[in-house]
Length: 140
Image (cartoon, rainbow, N blue to C red; front, side):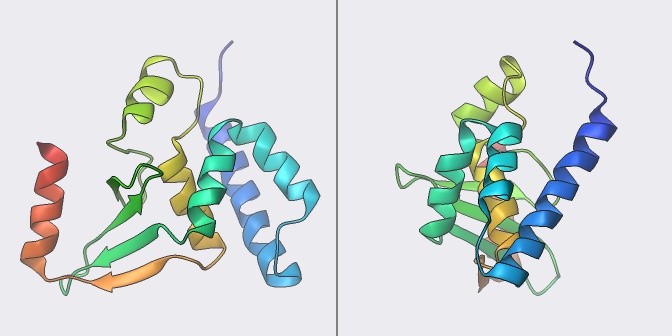
């Protein structure tokens, strides 16, 4: 089956915009939006929503304006993700997203998207060197 990536990305963006709208208008996600999220994201959705409920998503921002996200996973391991990227260094990303191609994104990246739309992302200021060290850890 051939998937048009642009169309898929547009659909995901529309759905995430609907999450924002639902949150603003109802203070929660309606069953209709939850159902659509489940259809699109499947298995990672419940874990991602759990991470959002636990406020496990933090934006680390440096004075230079650079930022990354850290998501504390269910095991307590922090996973670092770049802004505007679907990349995650977790094993599920490597296996389910890259190798098997049966998920659009891992639960950590989905948690970032949902946390931002639901205005639950914590913010932390770090200096430039700290952010550089965090990014270097991803590379190792």
